[in-house]
Amino acid sequence: MTTHSRNETLLEVESISLSFGGVHALSDVSFDIRKGEVRSIIGPNGAGKSSMLNVINGFYHPQEGSITYQGKRRAQMKPHEAALGGIARTFQNIALFRGMSTLDNIMTGRNTKMSKGLFWQALHFGPAKREEIENREFVEHVIDFLEIQTIRKTPVGRLPYGLQKRVELGRALAAEPTLLLLDEPMAGMNLEEKEDMSRFILETNEEFGTTIALIEHDMGVVMDISDRVVVLDYGRKIAEGTPEEVRANQNVIDAYLGVSHD
Amino acid sequence: MAFDLFLLEVVISGLMTGVMYSLVALGFVLIFKASGVFNFAQGVLALFAALALYDFLAEDGWFFAVFGFTLPVWLAIPATALIMIFLAWVIERAVLRFLVKQEEIILFMATIGLAFVLEGLGDLLFGSDVKPLDIGIPQGASDLLLDNFNLYVEKLEIVAAATAAVLVTALAIFFQKTRVGRALRAVADDHQAALSVGISLNKIWVIVWSVSGIVALVAGIMWGSKSGVQFSLSLIALKALPVLILGGFTSVPGAIVGGLIIGVGEKLAEVYVGPLVGGAIENWFAYVLALGFLLFRPQGLFGERIIERV
Image (cartoon, rainbow over all chains, first blue to last red):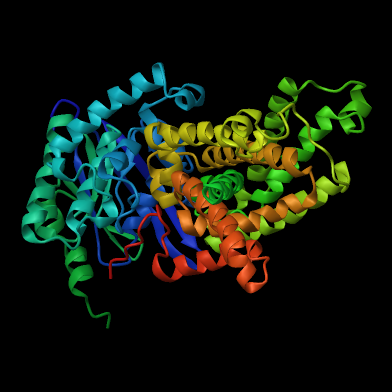
């Protein structure tokens, strides 16, 4: 929670509407993410939280609205552009390269930081080799940070679920992201794993000043680590504010507990 | 002693045929690694490369008809490589680009279509007669081995083996140690995740089809020099299938070892088991071997083990 740049906007989505055929996943959703904050997106299942992240990193292209990232406004992001612009993410259903080792998985996160041409790489010589070594060093730092030294060489397909989630976070961190999108990083974890993961997220935010957009179902975690929260329900924004404000909001309570419409 | 020498000769001749299979299988492995797709068109790519190369070299080709001269070998090979890269680019633009995020079976069907289109195109452009391909690889038996060890080994096969060794070493390093190599493997595992770390699928596909086009060129040169450039070349693709099952679809070294085992296996079977069942084992032995592997070790010798969490 770096304080100096607290009020600068890093990303702003305006009136985003997204539908698949006749299904409206998002309707007229607007909110912003400020530099250095932990911004949580919460809501019941099917509220459109993951769709929102997919819009931000360019997997989905909204029919209406605009996205302003780092001062540049566009109708839609492209995944490649988002990655180059410093947006990294993890997935709700882990999307790792299963056949590759932990180390290689995290190395792919450095993709946007490495630029030496195919020619040098094919020779595996000169500048490409130097670049490889430099980036490998950074990746070792990430591995130390996440305390996964012991599984460096293990193919990730063989790792238990909790560790896979951690490797996925490592791959995202390796990109030194400006904005980190985390889609349910603690889903399916036990208490101890959740505490570890919360610690990694907070440390990432505090030490590297990384801005974080977080989708999470565990309300305890959300209330603890978020600076601001936005609440979606049936693809619409129903509330937004500090954790305390959101917790007290009647719309939010209705959405979570259900309300009779008679 | 004479008997042992004969055995050795059979094994060596098997190894050499195996190298040829490996060269074709290699092209399959590359595309399979990067897209999870069995590229049915790989054999046709080899044929197409050989046809194009022949065209640059021969006086009855298009190139001679248009420019009035033929290219020397050292220029014709890079020129053909450029054509294969261009072909890869066209394939990405015209076919693969539209199939992102589709099921693998759909991509597979697309490669079958591609195989027929390329075969037809080759026929249309270059004609379907058998063409002798001579790029100066020495023919006949190696005198050195014949004189000193009384072994009969074709020079061409020695060249093919050496070429394959260089190719495999280069590819293995490329895949394991470089960014693009890692990106290729990443794309094979998970398209979405690959996109999220900034890997461009389109670029990767052009690269991988180019590389396997060049591997196809090498295979085309070797097969073409051995038995002439002819359309049955595209059928070698079928022989690569058991090679891949043995070696594992995702392993570059696997393609080599698989090829060698099939090559040696079918020669040994032909010589020692063949007479017992009336011969002609060589044609189907590879498939029986592959069937055995499918039953007992479906991931092949070097393939990545498939572990599914339930």
